Image (tube, rainbow, N blue to C red):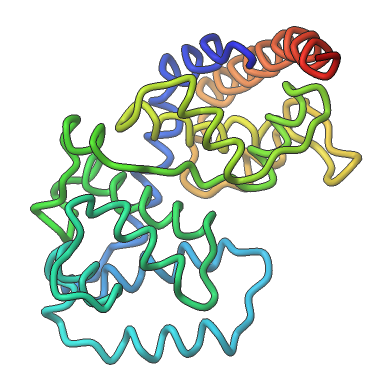
Length: 262
């Protein structure tokens, strides 16, 4: 198994870049919405819109059902998860319960369900004054006791394919890899920053995807700082990220060779 410590250290040291971007994005997303129902549904729409291909008939039925629920169903995480899962009592692990209930719905998959959970946690952590669920369990102890997942998409899969010597992983294998190398809870959520750094350091797609600083992607991300000093800082950090990933790749290839010879 590759040593992910240098990648983790980079993400932790530079977490403020992605956090600032997320803060601005979340404030714009929820601006002007006063009810918990409107806010929750707005976040759900924003998350599902990230899905590359949607079966509109499936997702339309989900929205019909959701929009018919009374306001009380959106007033707390417990109420929302209970209604979504069709049970009287919310599971003790609320975040895992939300993930499982959402993943069971047509139109939702592991990645989008994990992204929704992370989005709700992020709003409660970074924007407590805007959190629609004031009693969200987002303290360190609660998060450490929760089963959380990283929303692994093509960007993150490409990073792990690179450091794993060309071996293509999947949602489950990448999440298992990260969990084995790291603690649960808030630290686990830090790994989601891989998307930000991976997105702005990848050019092309599919078999032609390669790692290099991609200023066009950075400038097209609404909410990122656009002043000259910060952009230059981001560029330097992006190149540092690429170097760390590049240095991790040979070590992983050796591990893969050893494992395949057994």
